[in-house]
Image (cartoon, rainbow, N blue to C red):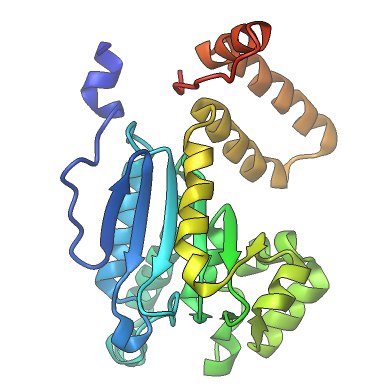
Amino acid sequence: MTPHLASGNSQSLAGYTPAHFGWQQQGAVGVITLNRPERKNPLTFESYAELRDLFRRLAYVSDVKAIVIQGAGGNFCSGGDVHEIIGPLTGMSMPDLLAFTRMTGDLVKAMRACPQPIISAIDGVCAGAGAIMAMASDLRVGTARSKTAFLFTRVGLAGCDMGACAMLPRIVGQGRASDLLYSGRSLGGEEALAWGFVNRLVEPEQLLNEAAAWAGEIAAGPNFGHAMTKRMLHQEWAMGVDEAIESEAQAQAICMMTQDFHRAYEAFVAKQKPVFRGD
């Protein structure tokens, strides 16, 4: 291993065991399971922080190429735990509240910054911070019975939480995002598919297999190219067209230096399917 990788820029998640959610590595696919099914998988202060730290670490992980997020027991995530988060927030000082809201935003930043494409497998309740995690993912697979709700106005807060006002309109459009963020209403699976919030709709019993298979296809692809695609999709939100075209020219030229690009050409000439290695 070259020195710049040995110094910590190429890590493995072998043996990783989180305390506040489930983790399983299936080949090059990492599966996160929010696993408090008796409460519909709410987040706590601790799980927020641990998820944030995992996604930050994934920027340096070389043996995981794609991520699936699911919830246990037929629901995705009911948001912040009412008793363990919402209640304590009502008694906090402004500095402590700001530290909390910045931490939750850091989870979204870490999800967007990690190079691995993220697929959320959405079933049942997907509310509040759960809806945000689904929104912050790159791709979403849902079920007809799923109910996604950005509930913040229902508890007297603004809809502008964890990047929702920036990201949701880019997924479903400004008018539809306004509907969801003002009302806090639930978006059913069929409507979510029609609106483009979810990319695919499957039966509940097929959900994890569909998401994992899709993640496996992505993981088998040109990982350096996928990471570059994710970075450019994020960065180009704040670019003009001319600036974006120049940035993409530079990004594509960099990708043309990879061995995966050469492998693809050689496989095409040989009439074979390329085997990508992410270098």
